[in-house]
Image (tube, rainbow, N blue to C red; front, top):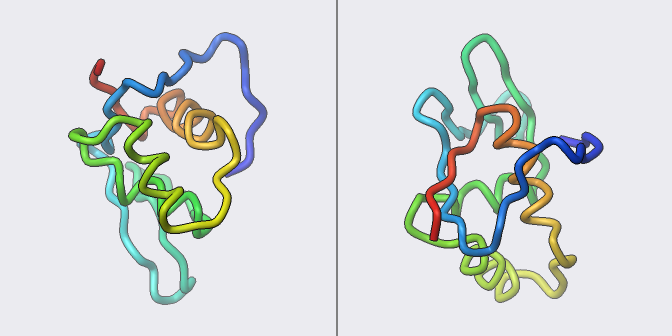
Length: 100
């Protein structure tokens, strides 16, 4: 998922608690060999980092906690990459946020 950020999109903060929207499912597509988001009439193919982020978005963890967990799994997690990724998915109504 590579889209340019738009200033009109709501920014995701590190205190927000993201979760998949009710009408969206994260699943592994064996034929593609990749994780996908299933959204009504849409399939979004994810890269490994996108899938890793979304697997941690359970509505209980904050964005900061997701970033910390990813930091323990991987050597380097670029600053604000998680927030930018989730901001794009919030704009597409794939992810919902609860204020922290």
